[in-house]
Length: 280
Image (tube, rainbow, N blue to C red; front, side, top):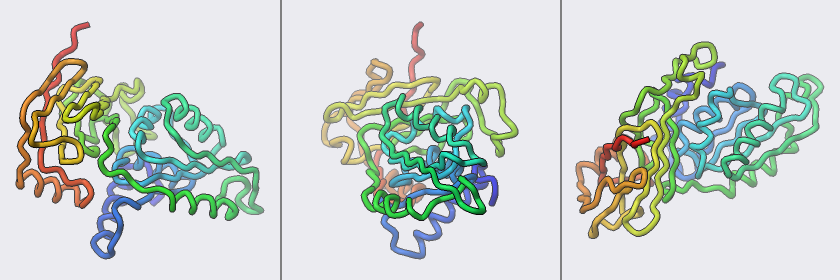
């Protein structure tokens, strides 16, 4: 697999994770995604689209196309560890420096290691073994939070699956990624026209949501997020969009368990919210 930034690569990675989980006893809160060079691009792209699956991502000697930068917002609760050689002649180090600046701009924590080493054959484009102890120590220190109380998701039209306890269901006209984003992109992609949803549990049984280009979304709820014995209030774009009781059901629990195959993300209730048109 050379093009790790494609939809086929994403599906392969997800299928591999599911296959390993079926065969071995894997802690779902200790799954990491890493890669170098083209594989590092895949770690970024797949990690951003599937962030709730991972305890952390560690891209090495890689970078991101400028049109993908908005998806870094999806890593709000997913730790990042970057490694890049200052003398990398294949993937210029400025690629990782640009990502670091973007993460700084949105206020996300990360680790960035920039080394000066060169390999006799690979030059600056390689992973020095001297970096391994710190990377392993970082892996050992991370553990996924499967149900964070604050979530951000940025989506284009080919990724409408659940993202943690949220799912964007319908949007205004937004970009739709092709199989090969690098060589094929529509005008909406070039304009970075993506849907965005930010949700936070701000008080007991009160969830506040801010949306951009979203027409309808779904919240998946469990006892870690709300108390089902009391009314729940959902505020969307500063307007109350739901207030009342939410009933958990076995049917919803089983359907979500079958869909997610993740014992740490079980949701017995879901609530679909229609977003009111905002008056300019």
